[in-house]
Each structure stands twice: as structure tokens, then as C-alpha cells.
Length: 332
Ligand SMILES: NC(=O)c1ccc[n+]([C@@H]2O[C@H](COP(=O)([O-])OP(=O)(O)OC[C@H]3O[C@@H](n4cnc5c(N)ncnc54)[C@H](OP(=O)(O)O)[C@@H]3O)[C@@H](O)[C@H]2O)c1
Figure 1 (cartoon, rainbow, N blue to C red):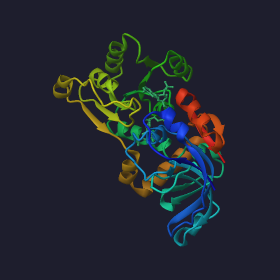
Figure 2 (cartoon, rainbow, N blue to C red):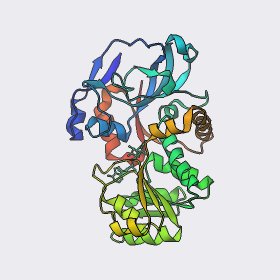
Figure 3 (cartoon, rainbow, N blue to C red):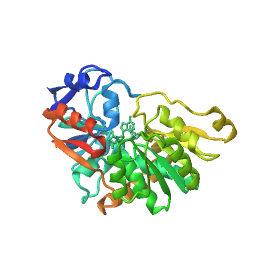
């Protein structure tokens, strides 16, 4: 089978990208609780980029096959999970030996979601991570009885999902982007509040709006100084949830006084941990809710390009130069 191999981590993404190679490997055999998936489509996510750069919380024995997420058909299954045979699944794995940027992929059956027949293959490929992350974050906000949210990276796919789902709950959002063209984009999608983090009066505008809509929850995918700017702008008792590190910088600029005297908190969100906390039964219920939302068009992952494995450098280059345009997919 054809695979994309990362030979060594390199914090310089261009050098790391150029070092990737295509390698033929033997098709693996599944263990008793595992399935062998013939991959149909696999996306590139920010976590793949961070992993390639050696800046993710998961490190593998190198060289390794890349790719954490994908979808395909189960063509072989271990003794205990035979009922998966022939099913289309969305899969997710971060274990050492294999990755989804390959023609075949071994997954723990437990980490596979059997996909409804009428969901598009490309949507199934991007199903296991982002829709659940958006749902989980919003669930936390709902538990806090939040009427207003601040979110950055708002023109990314999780940003879009949160916008669509929050509308149904009558939760208002202050969206933060970093380019004017994305202000236009979000306004066209019906968003009322969109700020550019690069504008001179950003912090002033953010504070004004945060108090106006009582934005007591924030979803931060960026880290660095914007985390401090967001927390400082929020009303008393607010909670900021850090779920991504797109800036690659440590969190900074948080006002000590705002934390002490206005009882503000900063916490983290990690999908794997949230999935463990909610349990299998609730996960399956949410999976059906999300699949239906995708099938009826309420939410969808934007795809900006489809590539062969051989075009990996071109594919990643296109993605990292315009992440807001959507995911790139490897189509097998
Ligand atoms: N904690 C978890 O369990 C979990 C699960 C899933 C995803 N995530 C994280 O969620 C975040 C969003 O993922 P996604 O799939 O929605 O991303 P995506 O669709 O690939 O889009 C990324 C978005 O982030 C923006 N962005 C990139 N670098 C930025 C920076 N330095 N400062 C500000 N904005 C920046 C991009 O805007 P431009 O077009 O301006 O570059 C783009 O709109 C990522 O950090 C990802 O790792 C976390």
C-alpha cells in the first residue's frame, strides 16, 4: 500500500513538508478488536501540521505514516468486531504505528464510527474530530447558561460549526478573525459581530461587545497574547476555554487583577478527554445528532481541494496558505 511518511520532525514547516516521502508498505492485519479500513478520503488538520513540526502533544516513533483522521470501507476485521465488515466508517487514531494518509489504515474498532449511508464520503472523512469538538465546546457553554460567546479562528471549520449550532440555541457570538476579507465572509454567513484582531481598536471593541452581549464564555483556538486580550475583555465570572494553539506561542498578557478581582478562569478542552467523560452511550447519541445535521446541510466541512497522496507537498502548501478556505483531502 502507498503511504506518506514523515522521516523526522522539523519546526520549519516548509522543510518538514519537503522531507515527506511516498513509501510502499505491506498491508497490515487487524488484531482481534481492530479493523482494516480501505481509506477513501483523509483530511489535513492543524493537529497534523503541529505534529509534523514536532509541536503536538503526541510524538511517534519515526519514521511514521501521517494522518490522524479519515474515512473508508472496512475490508478486514478482527474476530471480536466482525460486524464492522463492509461498513463505511469515519476513523480517528493517534497510535504509534500507522496513519490515515495511506491506502489502508488499521484502527481500533472502538474508535470508528459507522456512518449513515447518505452522508458524503468527504464529510465522513472530517467527521470524527471537528463536529464533536464544536458540539463539546458549545455543550460546556450551555451548561454555564451562556447567552454570549467570544471565539477566535472564527473563519475556520470549528468556528463555522459553532456559529451554526449557536444560532439554534439563540447564543450570540463575537467572532474574531485576523483578515478583513474574513470579516466580509462571516457577515455574508449572517454573523452580526465580527472583529479583526489586527485592527488598532481591537481590544476596545472587544470589551465593548463582550459587556454588551454578556459574553461570559470564550473559545480560544489561538493562544499567545490574544488569550490575555480576550480574558481581559470579558465580564466578571467569565471562563475562557483554550482548545488550540494556532499561534504556536505560550499564553500571555492576562491581567492579574482581572483574574483576582473579577473571578475569571482559563481552562482547557481536549476532545479525547471529553469523549471519555461523556461515555459511549451519549457519544453515540451525539454522533447521530451530528450526522443528521451534516446530512440535512445544517453544518458541513468546506473542502478547498482534493489531492492524490503523491501531491502531498502541493496539498499542504495550499492548506497552510489559506486555512480559512477549507480542508484539503487526500482522495484515494
Ligand atoms: N482541543 C481539541 O480537542 C481540538 C480538537 C479539534 C481541533 N482543535 C483545534 O481547533 C483549532 C481549529 O481547527 P479547525 O480544524 O477549525 O481549523 P481550520 O479549519 O483548519 O482553520 C484554521 C483557522 O485558524 C485561523 N488561524 C490559523 N493560524 C492562526 C493564528 N496564528 N492566529 C489566528 N488565527 C489563525 C485560520 O485563519 P487564516 O485563514 O487567517 O490563517 C483559519 O480560519 C486548531 O487549533 C485545532 O488544533 C482542537
